[in-house]
Length: 165
Image (cartoon, rainbow, N blue to C red; front, side):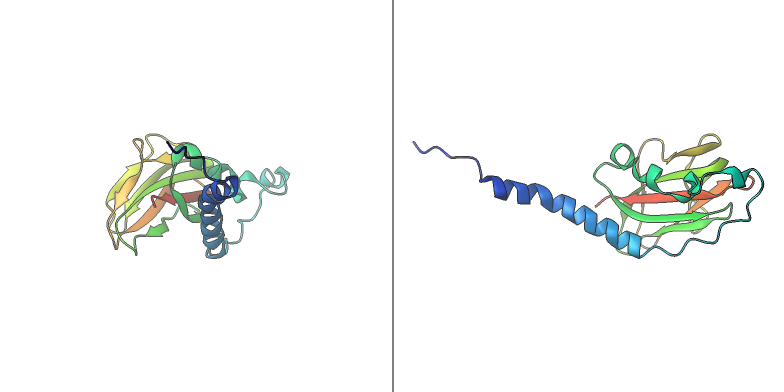
């Protein structure tokens, strides 16, 4: 009767580290491909009292939601803008399922649209942050372009998109 011993510890560490290393590389690639942020709008007296790095300029709060909103998914894009529709993601490689979160400086009604205007998901009421698709990811076909639209006066909105592997 042969007794099989557990794999050596270094092999286990390598096996467990590989997904983490791939995630770090993917995040690094996504960060290097991001377009430059548009210049901030002129500050008002109330806004000038804000801290040096306002929450509206950092994506850390949205990134922190990934484990609960998009488990097993990887970050596909980050975008920021105002009330106008903004292209969030293109399905160039094939069909995909996405999870999208947003954060705004004022309450907005957020929606995800396809390039033709078809509605993918919408927030049920105005909010300063949230995830679109109440029941989970939205799926798109190869060639689709996903746009984010936020309706709210004077809003600066940050969007983050996660994609299923």
